[in-house]
Figure 1 (cartoon, one colour):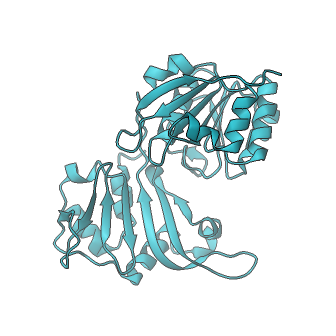
Figure 2 (figure 1 turned 30 degrees about the vertical axis):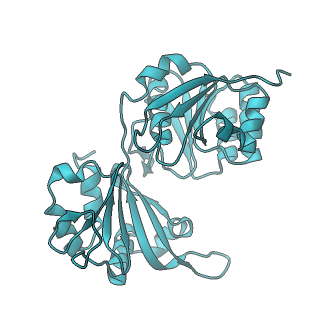
Figure 3 (figure 1 turned 120 degrees about the horizontal axis):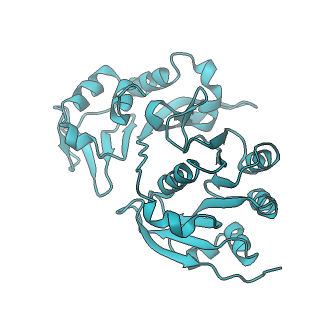
Length: 307
C-alpha cells in the first residue's frame, strides 16, 4: 500500500466541499468511524460502534439533527458515483448491477437508487452512498485460533458483530502455513483490486472472487487442493451441498452465519442441516455490534446424525 488510510481513501472519493469539511474534523474523531453515509437531500453522517454523528456546515460533528447540518445534494451523489466509476459508468456495469464497489484500502461502498429496465438492469438514479471502513484487526482471533484450528467452525453473530473480521483473521493465520482458499463472493473479505488483496489473508491463501459461493467451493476443491476453505454467509442449499462435498474430500471449513445464539442459528435451515449432519465441530458466538470481533462463547455442536 502507499501509506494512505481507509479514511484517506473515502475522502478522495468525495466532492470537494464535503472533503474540506471532513478534513477540518480532528483525526481522532475520524479514525474510529465504521461507516460514512451520504443521502441526497439529507445530512452526511458518521456511524460509530456506539453512536451516530452528523456533519455541520462548519465542519463540526453533532449528535443532534438541526438546521445547521450540511445537506447532501443529488449532484453530490452523482459526483461520488462518477469518481467511483472513474468517469466511465460503462466500465463499471457489474458494480452498478450489484450496487457495490470495492476501492483502495479495502473500503466497501454500497450504492442505492433506481434500477433501469431491461435484461441488464443497472442503477441509474442514485439516492445514497455508504462507505464502510474495512479493518483488519490482527490479533482479534489469537485466543480462538488454537481452539478452532483443524476443526469445522461456524462463526456466528448479528449485524456488525465482526464475523467477517474474525473470518479474515483466521484465514490470515491459517493461510500463513497451510494451503487455504478464501471464497470471497462479493470481494468483501480480501478486497481484490487488479488481482491483489488489499487485506492480508495469508501468504498461502488463494482467493476466488466474483462467483457464486457454491461454484467457488467446487472450483477450489477440483483445482486448488486446499487444506482449508473459508467462506462468508452460507445462504443456500447449493452452498450446503458444496460444503458437504468438500468435507467428504477431507477439506476443513470455516464459515460464517447470522445468529446471535444457538436457537437463532438453528432457525437458518441451511446451517441447521449442516449441524444435524454432524459435519461441524464448533460454533463461535460473537458478543455483538458494541464489541465487534469479541467472542462471547465457543460451543461444541451436538451431532444429531453421524451417518
